[in-house]
Image (cartoon, rainbow, N blue to C red; front, top):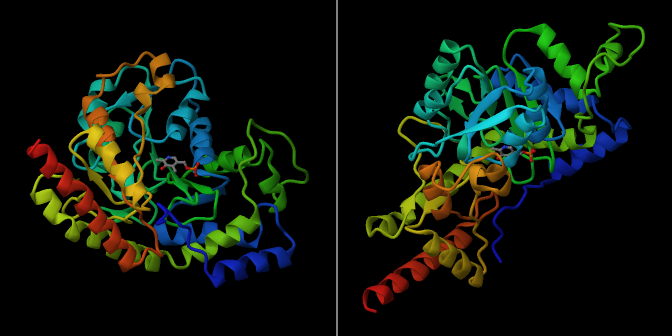
Length: 386
Ligand SMILES: *Cc1c(COP(=O)(O)O)cnc(C)c1O
């Protein structure tokens, strides 16, 4: 069986974990937590970085930091993971779903403009598959309408856009280091504060530490620590941070390997696209990527589901992706209906992601590619002659 994803665990990861255990500081805020935060700050040029237990927690923290509340509206794509919308809902604010662009499957700035009302407070763009949203337009809109921007850069770690890194462009950025992401520590994330605002950063530290000023206490800035604001438990263990450090140190090696895998899929599947069987994920001219995924678009949902099943029979774990949030049971409760976001609905029903991970071998990739040809071409042929 070729899995869909496989975490990369080398001797270095094991060594760092042992070292973290030997340091006997296994809660948060230890040697490796600080080290990982420093690597992210330095490499990506963020003002301040806080490791978190997940990207979901970073998103929750961002919504608290923005002061979102009942009556506020926040614009985000429907084509995203639930955590983006949950962060907004948990503050009592209303998620407003916008349409995506057909080329990148990222939020469409024109639809953002259509959905802005007097209640709109923020935009939460997500960088799908490690390809940047049209941040230039999004930041312009945000400035014009005085909106905050929080980047859900869960999939966008180590990607450049116009000289900056994704996650450092909006007011706040959120990263994920979940097992399924390019750089992973099992469960983990980071909150990036990009505005030069020490007060905002201090509040983020407090929210992450259960609403206490414990971080300031550790730095000797206050005599005792106490409850000063609302918050929760968003600090990851130093053991996980050690695992993350090992991954961050080989960030570019991972990116290069994934680029090779991406390009091989892209080139080898050209024949199927030329004959109209599928459309390959393409990276727009001039765009960087971390090659988080490789997807194809089949011609219909039925065909996608058939291909998924046939690949599984051949021992290949491919995967569909997001069920658009606006047509999920929760989205329906919010008043959305099928037909509200036609591009999102059409694309999500035809999308199929192929196995993509560091250790995927050329032999395995050849087998996946051959299987796709075998699955798609004879069936088309049979249909045509039915
Ligand atoms: C993975 C992902 C998340 C959630 O990340 P966790 O670290 O698992 O909480 C949020 N948003 C997007 C777009 C994601 O891909």
